[in-house]
Length: 262
Ligand SMILES: NC(=O)c1ccc[n+]([C@@H]2O[C@H](COP(=O)([O-])OP(=O)(O)OC[C@H]3O[C@@H](n4cnc5c(N)ncnc54)[C@H](O)[C@@H]3O)[C@@H](O)[C@H]2O)c1
Image 1 (cartoon, protein in one colour):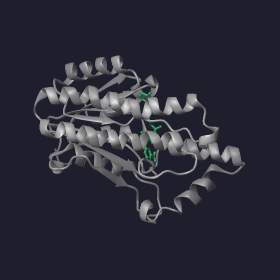
Image 2 (cartoon, protein in one colour):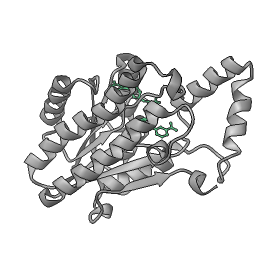
Image 3 (cartoon, protein in one colour):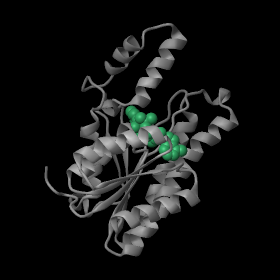
């Protein structure tokens, strides 16, 4: 592996599993120091142990609810105290509630917006302000979604949160560009993660069909014929964090195996 991120420090939310864990692992492989943050302490500890074996001394973990601004400030301070710098912020924590808009409770709407959109705002603001204060440039990244660019059935809250994130990203990109900090989104397609597995299990139970059948039908709609491998997606996060993307800000990169054009 190249050391594209040698000496850099990153903060990744939702880092205990799925996309966040894959991004943390890729950053470590490219030489970075990484703090993973997550609301589930057991999964967070397990992820930390796993990564510690792979990159001793370059991983830290902090329990965090991304909707809590004061806790995020404290987590940022802890990450800075541990590694002495902060160069990359990845607002990735997210939840999915699938309901038709007419059946969506206000409580569920608020929960999704709170974690996905307000959480991304808090993370990007708190980490972004420290990256700006450091004065050496840096990269703020948010995980949006294909549903951040196009709506669909049962996705009202989730899609609204992910569209909102793209607006937030574009505004922050314009504001932070003169300060040397780049802000971009990644829009993953259908990735091979626990989030999607839970969805197939839930749908299978509702419809009395095996989750594996639902998954196979779903996968057949992806032009590349497979769910997205997390290491391949994580490469896009490495690109945005590294000098390889030094003239790029305010953009959304889609990584979807051709879903959008299929
Ligand atoms: N899986 C996909 O196919 C896919 C596609 C597009 C976008 N995304 C987005 O990618 C991101 C990661 O998704 P994933 O598939 O890895 O999901 P996941 O459920 O596997 O992981 C999400 C992580 O976020 C954590 N989290 C949830 N609420 C939190 C909170 N309030 N504070 C801190 N951490 C919290 C969870 O504990 C979990 O570890 C999400 O924002 C999701 O919307 C996923």
